[in-house]
Length: 352
Image (cartoon, rainbow, N blue to C red; front, side):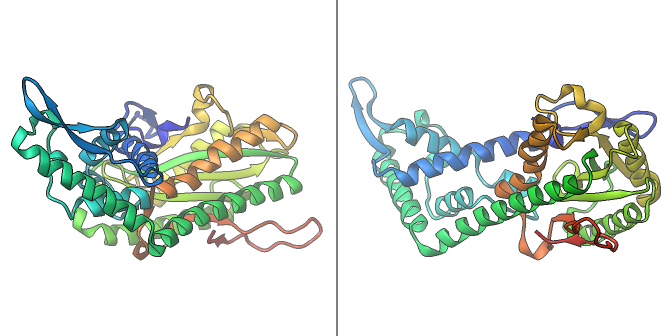
């Protein structure tokens, strides 16, 4: 659901982006999600995952339990690809600790299959891999790792609670809203020098500040009620934003047009033609769990999908890959609306 967040796109003649094909980035993220549960299983198990067995014809051979085979597959994915595609991000703590432990050991199995291990090398490989597992379990049992995991989980839960409360507060003031969902990024080749990503990040944040300011001022659409935004980085798309914007359903109905207006404002005014965007509202029919468009507070399915699917994507991506602390915050939302009858000032961006 909402897998197009990390898909490849191509511009049509108007500058709007059209869904095209899946990318290597999405494949890497899928690998990342598969590694974490394997590591969790290894840590919760005390079994020995690797051993040797004697075959009549071939002699001594390397043997792995089903869980051991999954661990070997996770190790073969390696951390190099992730650091190449997401250089400014920290890995999920379970994935990170696996790769960190693997770097301490010299094993042929990290580069080849078990079938290529000669009988003479089997004892060493069995010993090395079992030592790696024991080191992994020892490191994960330490207080430092537990603190890191707790910090990740708490951050996700905090953001989830915050954004759900935010949506509830908006619906408390406006019984019907128009929910706009956009992906915003830059033309291919905009980030020419990977070594200067920190410099580009400064410019990207300035562009976001301009867009946020314009939306508050009513440009290109008057009356924004609130927003939530996530900044990410990918090897192919570079820096990009996943943006949610809320408008009063009593004033507007055409969500596709509203989304296009914001996308064009990003492309033409903010980035001076260098920006690109994807209008998610224009693809509502392709979503299995629809959570954008025009919705009333009593549309339980739509509101539930908005919270559980659309918004949770912005929250949960941080659990798999998050910007390193030195890059600053990557998640923004408007101020919590005040109760009815209280004069409101301009909604600012807050950290959650």
